[in-house]
Image 1 (spheres, rainbow, N blue to C red):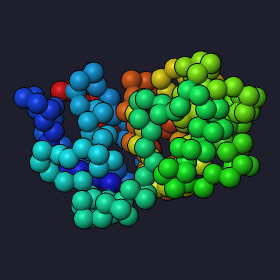
Image 2: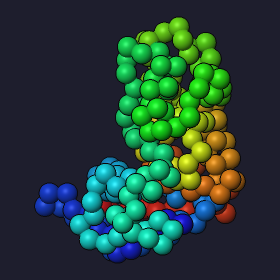
Image 3: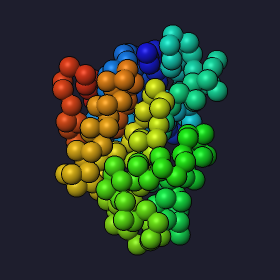
Image 4: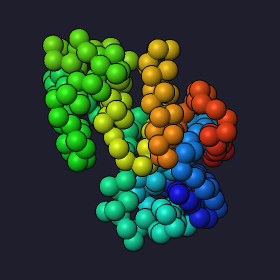
Length: 206
C-alpha cells in the first residue's frame, strides 16, 4: 500500500499543493490529472524519493520511505516524461543499458520479447534510436515495463507520442501489472482505458 500523509510541496515562492492525503491499494492505478504547473510531476518525483516534500510523509507498507529508502526503491520502476535513451544506441542497447542500471533482469531473449511486445522487433538491432520517430522512442523507454517485476510503477505521461495501437499495448501491460497485485501511479492528460473499479483519480489544482 502507498500513502501520502499531509504532503506539501513548494517550488520557489509558490506552493503547488498542501495537505495531500491519498491511499493507493494493491491492484489499483492512481491517475494524476491537472493543468501544467499544478504539481503533478513534482508529486511523482516525491514518490520516487528524488524530491523531498516541504511537509508530510510518504508511506510504503505503513513505513516512511525515508526510513527504508533502499528497500523502497528496489520495489519501484520509474519512467519520466523524458525517454532517457541515448540517440547513438540501438533500441536493444538502450533497453539493456536502462535495465542494467536499475538492476532489472535483461538477457537477450527477455529484451527481444519486450521490444517485440511494443512493436519494435525489426528496429531492435538495426538502427540507432536517433532515426526513430518520437512514438518509437517512447516505446523503447516503455519496453522496460515488460521487464519489470517490481510492485510500484511510477509513470509520467506514458502515452505521449503513442498511436492508438501502442497506447492499447501499454494499457494492457498496466492491467496485467495490476492483476498481479501491483500498484501504478500515472500522470496523464489522457483517459486510462481500464475499468473504473481499479482506477482512482487525483486532480491537481495548483
